[in-house]
Length: 432
Image (cartoon, rainbow, N blue to C red; front, side, top):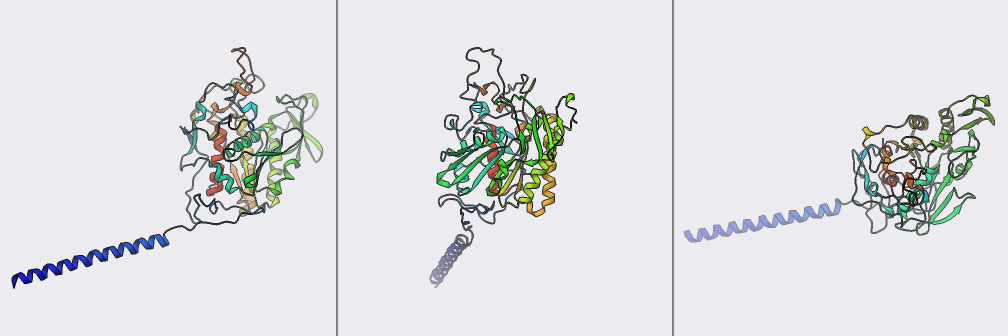
């Protein structure tokens, strides 16, 4: 009997163990089914058409079927994209001077022009409070299908549009479809995406009569109409899905100011002119006020970026009197200070931007500030310097040549502006 009892006891224990294992397996399978069924994000699908008024929501966009898609309810961490530092980037640029040579202005093609160092190419921008993804050219083009962009302003705006085109050309080569008589305003088309990019030459954003050659040498003072916007860009503005607008440096030039079709003063004019020197800050403030008011009243559905002016890095002089820029790597914030003139320009820009945002209220949602001044202030190494011309020291290693410490080498630091812009578009981060 004892033996029989032990056998029955063992059998009961085994039955208990079998039931326990079975229950555990059923629980695990049920949990996995629950997670699989309800724990995944559904892909966001947005119909993109040719309507210029349609707008891509920063957190609800669709990529191609085989690309990662952004969930509709993702929580994006807040981050100041414009405060950070430059860190080493072993990958370097996504394009080369050779792969994009046809688009790059010869004066910014530093490597082809003989710049001997290349270390300035191996840095990337890192915001303090978040990661910043590398610019994805394919993703950008997919987001911009049937859209139109314009980058409006002076030669820095041209520098920027060339940077963007070079980065996008790694996916598809742009086709130039328009240029004005002087080849200063241009438009390109990406056929596979029906995407257009325009570069609009309007250095003051207001009407101006300019008398200077290609090297920036003036034969007479600029005649500047502070209260009349330049229709080169305002006529195009209503049709744009995205625009980057900027100005700044040109207001430092000698000019006569007009309001209500009458001369009201000047900047840098001789005493013999019997005109009141109002200062360039007066002209810039007045002009930007009209620009911002135009944007506010336009009721555009497009996303409008206003970019602050970007400081130069001339040392021991300026453009016209022998200034140079010889640094070969980024510097820390403590090693560089923004020049007084650049501070004045930026103060005017920030004040006018904040004014119009306050006045527009909720309608200012699609007006964004791109404040790259601090970001690029620490990159004195990114300019052409003497290599704005082709191999300037081949005949004489001690030759005196014009230095460019204002524009940016391509490839170069200006490419990383596009990293920030794409992050704002995709994830809705507005920077500050």
